[in-house]
Each structure stands twice: as structure tokens, then as C-alpha cells.
Length: 267
Image 1 (cartoon, rainbow, N blue to C red):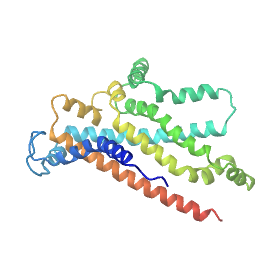
Image 2: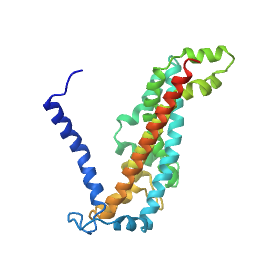
Image 3: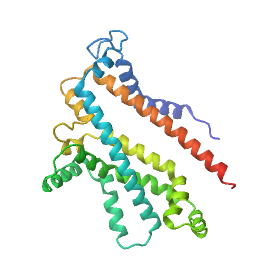
Image 4: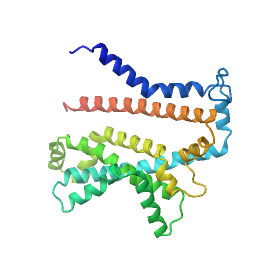
């Protein structure tokens, strides 16, 4: 194996520091006892207690979680079906148009997407709130799920499905019994990516939200405009910890799934 040079190690260290040092500083200052974010006043859990006593912030966090779970689940189902259609139906009429419309949110600026959805909801006289934000996030994240699942389906051996159908399975049963377990790690990865994008979105949610449906990013942005409070650091630290736990759980589940697949392969 080629050994890392001093230049490569230095570049890697600087790159990782650029990415993660601000996060480390944010986590440390979330335990700051001082009200001033630039002055260290000792270790304290004061701002975590402030967050759990802030009804408006808790309501926004609950709204973001509900929107994220529902939109990620819907996006995973629709994105997986779209990926199956593009992978298995290679020559159906309108495939180019379908794939172009599916992947448009990948390259479309979020401002344009949010404004387009706002005009749609106004045109159909839809009351803006939880469901409009959920539909908007589903539209945004479905294409990311489709990309992840389609890459896995493209490398999958189709003879496994054909063997299942030769043994008496119809196409739907073959998909549920053979294909879906094999692509389950990529489906789970697509769900987590969709959930993370939903939790992170500010622009599209600001166009499609309504009274009583403020998401956490909108709430944080409105607070930060008046000055960064230590409570914001505590909220961000909790989000980072939650995402870290989800990533660890997903990694363990993926390893377990791959081991089960390897053990079942000789059979």
C-alpha cells in the first residue's frame, strides 16, 4: 500500500479540522454557564434546562420531527417505487421525461422550488400548515431516495428475482421476498437522508408553512437574527447527538443485514 506523505496527512488534518472544529466548539459552548456566548463562565447544564422549559422551541422541534418522519417515510416509498420503475422498466414510453421530472429537485434552487409549491398551494386554496410542509419536503427528498436505491438496484443480480418467479412467485411477491430484503440497507439509508434533509430545510419550509406549524430551523433562524443565545448551542448539540446515534444504529443494522445475507448465500 502507498504510504501517506506528510503533505497528505497535513491536508487531511486541516480539512477535518475545518469541518469538525466549529462543531466541537459549539458543543463545548453549549455547556457554558455564561449568558454571553463569547465568554466562558464554567461548565453548566443551564441552557439545556432552558430549552426544555421553552414551550415555543419544543413545539417547533416536535413539528420538525413529525414532518421529518412522515415526509421521509412517504419519500422512501415513492422514491423506491420510482427507482424500481427506472431500473426494471428500461424502455417504457416517457422514461426520459419521468426521470427528468424526478431528478429536477436535485439541481433546482430551493427558492424556486419553494415559490413554485407556494403558488400551487395558493392556486388550489390549500391551507398552509403541517401537510403543505410535509408535501413540500416529500417532493424535495424523494429524488435523493431514488438515487440511493437505484444505485443499489443497478448492481443487484436480476437472476435472483427470475429464479423466484420460476419457482412460482408473481413479480410483486418476488420483489417483497427477494429484492426488498437485499436493498433494505439502501432503503434505510435513503430514509435517513430524507429525514436529515427535512430536518435541515429552511427555505422551502418558510414558503409553505403557516400559523402554528413553525419548524425548528425557522424558529432557530428567527432567534439567531436577534443574537445567538447559548440555548441555541444546546439545541444544536442535541440534534448532533441524535444524528450520531441514528448513524451508529444504521451502521450496526447494515452490518447485521450484510452478515445475514452472507450466511444465507450458500443456501
